[in-house]
Image (cartoon, rainbow, N blue to C red; front, top):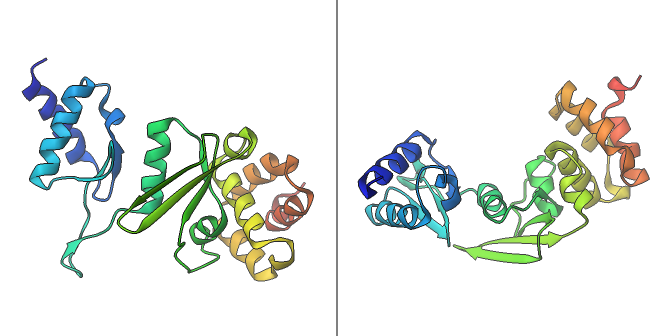
Length: 205
């Protein structure tokens, strides 16, 4: 296939992505060889159609009419793009998990994730992302929502899981998510599972 064809197919795929999407070079491996992908993305970056965030990681900018400028890339999307590029499984932890669960309004100083990959740190535009290696079960043994809730409760600590927190999580999770959470979390730390049972109380048999 000619290089112009590769460019056309890559352009089309990016055009179909919603603004704010973060992608990696391997996302185009099914339609072009790596040399053609890199050249095509370099051209799009030069034209301002996409932004290079980190090596091999780009985003399709989302424009804010209010600010009259492109919005910064979503750190969570960047983290998952890094994980996808490296074939890691990750789950938000610490303040990152609390922020995503809306148990904290504080923007994390460092976006942290447990990972089945190596310990790694990344920085771009004053944003810091940290991957902490953990047991495979913590990173890959649960669905996203189960891992997120477990990490959120762990970040709060046993003594700081209030009725308000339980109520917030109970209202946030769908009935199906609660069923999955209750089933998957049975092997986790006892005190965390006790709180999960409270969150999912209406689904106990």
